[in-house]
Length: 261
Image (cartoon, rainbow, N blue to C red; front, side, top):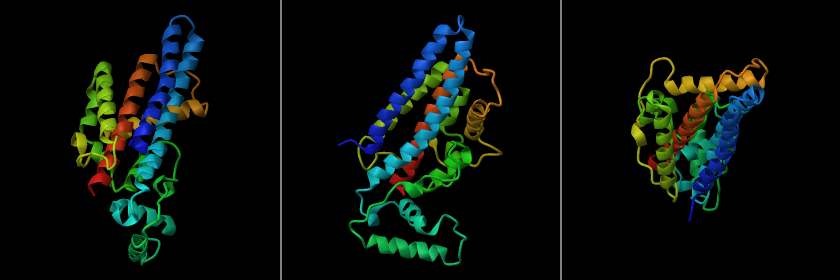
């Protein structure tokens, strides 16, 4: 029996096919219809960011869907805690007995045999854009303290030193291996796959900087701050592939945490 997250990844592939269609059209008119080419490039940029934003929400919903059939007492600790924060809020300093109250809620729900969790508490309500702090907040609800520490010096960091061909090859490998590891439940993901053991980073990590750029590109186009096309199609193809690699890295890290906690 396939998992919800595995089926969702198939849907994600179809979403990216939509971007690939626009890319093909842009390449076809690159040297003949400048206005159309520029419009397509701008549309591709916005759509890439939209798919990135949608993926975070979709991945969370489908991971939780896979865990809904698990009795509350057998859920990973991080999932128990986050779900109970639904009732108290996420400010752990809201009142002195916050931690004790969370523990009492967990113990009460552990006595239930038919209680099912839902995805709402696991999706950050701070910001809809895929900004680093929003992504970090979502990952923390699955027990990942700072997802960018996991990415720092991991194999996923290597994409920033790769050629476009190497990036595409890395994407294909990430796609196949991720699908294989989440194809059955419980997921078969080792602790810290692809050398994603947490490491401190100075300033901002490469992936944080990349995501800053992702959001800046979208903001300039969506809010009318820049009417010029600043990205050529080859840059956008590389940009798209890096975003897709980040999607799989995000998924692997949070699934690894809940599988091994």
